[in-house]
Length: 640
Image 1 (cartoon, rainbow, N blue to C red):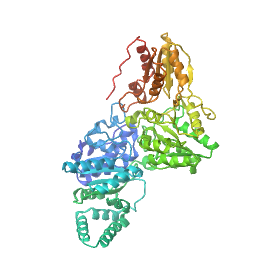
Image 2 (image 1 turned 60 degrees about the vertical axis):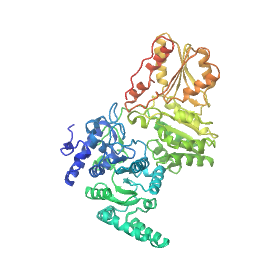
Image 3 (image 1 turned 180 degrees about the vertical axis):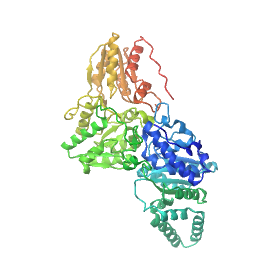
Image 4 (image 1 turned 90 degrees about the vertical axis):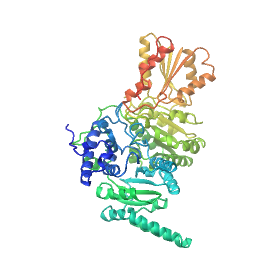
């Protein structure tokens, strides 16, 4: 396929190259940038809709501000692909999310134009305020600009940061990229005129003069005058909420009209007004690419696709995804138990709960990007006798850890945590890899923690969680498809803390937790061909551990290897501590834990990541041989 012609974009190696462009040239640049973005993401896959929506905004910000001296912080980062193209990374943009290529999010180590890494939402204002205060303390002169989406503004952290910014009064520009909230009045010529007026130096100077005069009035009159001015602008523009938090509000502005964007940004850049400012920009997801405009949800994150038709590449038909299996199993349990409710934090389709919501709309709750609230909300439901399932990605649940501990675990409330994206996640890399949930949940008293080896086991674990009514429980499962086993007609609760043995041997014990089980079975076959008889067991439960099974494996085998797709401090640590307490490490047992290594593994194919982690069959075999002194374990170089 022929790439689009981009004569204006070809002149841009870094942002300073576009600062002398005319407005007509900047319009041409935006059009070419959008075409380049569509073409690149059609090759790599990735986040398309949000990036298409900020093309003109990206051009305007880099044209007006002196990046990288001025700090430009993108919240989440999936809207930063145009930013990457304009900041010296165009030549590598077709390596996006590929092994050794560009990250799918902003990354400090990747470019000086990325002052803050962002892959989880709602961090930009906090980080930007920190940079602004650091600037003030050091006596430096630079602008700090944060771009945050309307979805990210649903998180409490954004409001905590705004509240702090309003109190500190450090100079900070927050650009609210509003592509869904519909909190603004119609955007047009009058709105643009008002935004230019209230962002102008003349208006700001008059406002400051009026404020100085008002300070000499009696306090009641001064307060009334200030509120009258703020609310007058709030009525015209819809910014009263932000004004009440201490921000000077400007907007809404059409985020696709450079005639509106550029003068407002220049006014705000040059204004002498101190304190935080919020610029409200209204954009459209998928702007400029018809398929993405027509289906913004479908084109939020895409696989490789045909630029002409918009048709996304489909993987060959295979087993259902773990996410779908979970959703269907939960629906089945909810058919039997009217107490079951489901909670998601702005990820209904990602967690499969969109399927649940279609069947039980009154029993499914999307609370927005508010994981802390989601967990305590679930705790409140549980306290009143409901059976809540809180479906949150492993890395997103990290954000609600205090609530898991304080509001759920200490009170022994039966909240069920469905932890999607557990383990390595391929192209999304370290920021979304569910590496730590086994460690951070396994240390909590009373927590039941499960990990299915396949999709059939997941169905049974959903039923197990539904049946646990006296304590919290969690089950973790990976991104992607199952292994292809037949699914049971209905889930059956498992005996708590009981594993299963799939293969009996005599010399080597391989104890697997979760979906590394097929690799353990393959390793056992390899070992058998070498004359080494191996037992393979599926732990099923990280907590409570199957003490009887673990002790038997330790007593009856010379080598014991525990395999888990989680960080150090997880299941293997619990097994090792139990064996140490029982004195079963004193008699010569060769114990080897295989966990994720003590590094953050970069984005790559899932298979490549597993090899880097050393959790494939070949590494299991080499670990056994090394323990027996038959061979040195292979050292696999880790790509930085």
